[in-house]
Length: 242
Image (cartoon, rainbow, N blue to C red):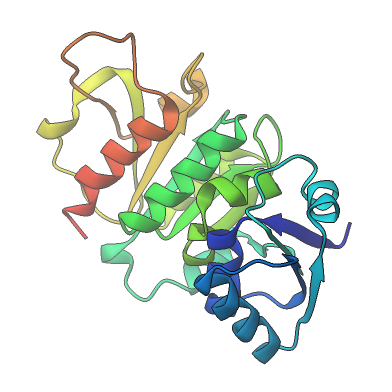
């Protein structure tokens, strides 16, 4: 498919409001009375999108079982950048934080990581082509519109990309169960935060490329935080430097 079929009120609203992507069609559940939905319809029409009012069954089929909240949006696919394009968009590298995902395969985790990135000033997320979930409609629903505020960088080889960024002056910090206490690390910018998978963490080679490996001190009770929760904590800590 050449376009994205996205679902969820907040996701659709943020995409239309941001104006970064071309939008083609907005499908609303017939009889929907929510004030924000009416505002979305007005914005979509102003952007030149066709607006359709359909029965709930049609939306169910389009969303393929997803929680559509009475809203489906057909929009241009998310633009994926290479590192050169993404770096060109940065106005001040001394205040730049990026993230890289090493083996994140769960769409809800990726969506939550994108939301945390947008919240704490992480401006780009690097996603390898292999062994990672793509930017699916489910990911975008979980991100709840935050994808419009974060650049997505796609790479073939994560380790080569990390080395290329180190040549550009980036400091690389890996998040892992075993490492320096997060609150004891004096982060330097520009920074790249590497988040590994919940099961196996970072790949060994990726870990070797990190300038420091950081861990989150825990009080016990659970074995570990999931990847998105850990990412949020690390992003918050490093955001103090931005």
